[in-house]
Every structure is written in C-alpha cells, then in structure tokens.
Image (cartoon, rainbow, N blue to C red; front, side):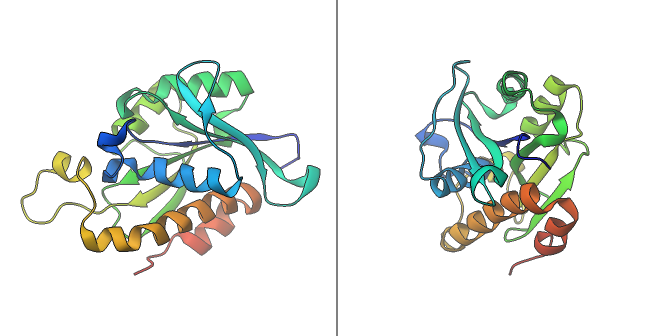
Length: 200
C-alpha cells in the first residue's frame, strides 16, 4: 500500500429510523463507528445517492491510509449503484473496496473477513456484485446468526436485536471497526488471523 491509494469502505443497511435497530443494518453501525473515530460526520456526496466521509487511518501524516467511508441512501437491494458511482468518482478498483454487512451463517458475536466470493443470498452483496461486474472485493462479515426455531429468516434479518444481543452489540461493532482498520493497514492475512474467531 502507498499513501496515494484510496480505499472505499461501505457499510450496508437500509436508511431511515424505522430500520436503524435491525440486524440487517449492522453495516451502517460499523460505518458510524469508523466515522466517529475520525471525529467527523457523514455528508451528502455530490452524486446524491450516498453519504460519505473522507479521512485517514493508521499511521499519522502522509503515511496514513486514505479512506472514503460511505453509506448508500437507498435500500439494501439497490446498494450497488451508489457504490459503483463512488468507485468511479474516486477511481477506486474493486480490490480496494471493503463492504461491511450482516451475515446469517455466522453466529452472533463472530466476525469473518474475506476477499471475494458469492453473495450467499444477501441482497446487498448481490446488488454490489452485479453493479461492479465482480465479486472480488473485501467483505467484513458481521455475524447475526440464523433465527431460532421456526422464525422466518426475513423477520429475523429485518428485526431488532434481542435485549441480550443489544447489550453485547457495541463491543462487536467496535471489533468490526477495528477489523476494517486492520485490513487496510495490516493486510488480509494478519486481519484474518486476529479477527476470524468467535468472541463469545
């Protein structure tokens, strides 16, 4: 990595207060945590389809990595268009894109970082892969676990965290934000070794 490289970090979710507490919106929460670390606030990008923050993480001065943090202003299943527009605007290739999203097949309290792969039924990932024409971008997969019993999967994903989960959620959001920073500053192998483990 060189100081001139710019990374795009996009948290997936659905906009508006009605969705704010849903499991599907954990990507937004992690993006918010990263923005708070920069001491900044999201602002509308000129494309009109996303909110962004530009900053640096890691080392101080010109050696710090340049990042653009983003949240699309559209619903999850339309995330690809705004993200593609941002990659074009900032001239960011797919291999410097990090997408943060919820993951059903990973238990709550667990995190996985990877490069590439399919969408595994995730509408946001499907939209991003379709818009970019590739799946070769980084993913920070934040576990939400599958629903217990016979609860419908959609109801689980588009539902609020349980009271017990809400107590633990801030810790997991911080850890996911740490993983994003590690990925950009230390690389994939180091990040996977440190963060691809259960925390509970």
